[in-house]
Image (cartoon, rainbow, N blue to C red; front, side, top):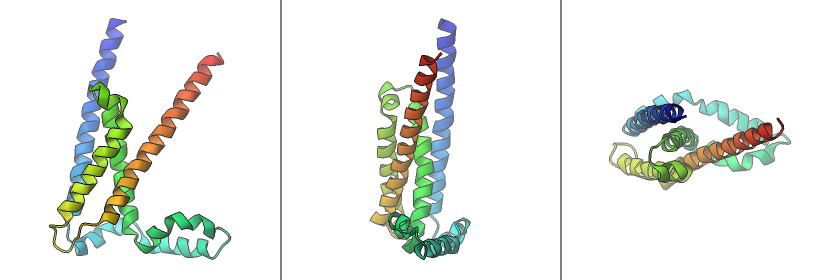
Length: 175
């Protein structure tokens, strides 16, 4: 039994280090994207087909499903907010799994909360950094999109964890 516990602690330590490295690399990638001037950033964000999103929005707004569009109207008007939300959702996932594998019991126990705090503070520092980049500005709306991405990631992880725990308990009790 002691050997199994030692192996699981070793695996947790390895997982923590892997997630920590991935989180730091992801933060560096965000910093790199934020360091690019606005004209270069527009060409890089080409991976998100803005016109495709606008066409979907136009189609849905002319159909009976237009009520679904209200929460997403900001992405139609300011599609860069969707990029912020997606980037920071990925960052939030990595932060959460880093903290869940942390040897620090407080960080482990409250990983979702600390991931939101760290992700939001990083988003704020990133917006401050952008104020020094030529052609870029700091924006509270960008920070709101960053924070929303991190919070949405934590919500998805929370729901996934609750369903996994509930399914495990259900499968154990039915055996």
